[in-house]
Amino acid sequence: MISREALALAKGFLVFAAIVGVPAVIGTCYFGFKSFQMAREGPKPPPTPPSGKGGAIITGLEMMDYAAGKAGRVFDAAAFALAKGLFAGSAGALLFAVALYFTSRGLYAGQMWSRIAGGALLTVLFLVSLLMVLSRLGGASSVLALATLGLSGYGLWVIVLRFA
Image (cartoon, rainbow, N blue to C red; front, side):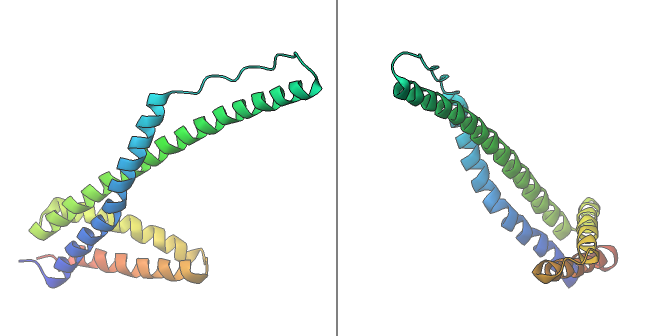
């Protein structure tokens, strides 16, 4: 039987898994579909260069059309790269949420591997929030860092001392 504190820590991991996992599922589906759609369409055909026939106004308009076509290809490539990057980030967040979920289930069962994984995660969170507090950012970010420092310190105390 695990203590109340350990049960609260396991529930905290489960809640954090849901908070990270729900937007990650939505992002993975959306950006994955958009990346697939952009890859299937392929790049746009290259713009036709100005012909040089006609007057100065026609040549100027053809030149502006050519420049806009080149800029459109650059923007399309940037959008495709951004969609692929956001897909990779949301897929990574989804894997992290799955890992948090299984760590929570392991903490409920009192497994040693979940204590090690949870301790490693909380140690990293503790150190990052300690660096944020020591950097003296000020404002709301400092208060958030101090609260995260306290919660991760409490979680480490629970993992190390309160598991039966």
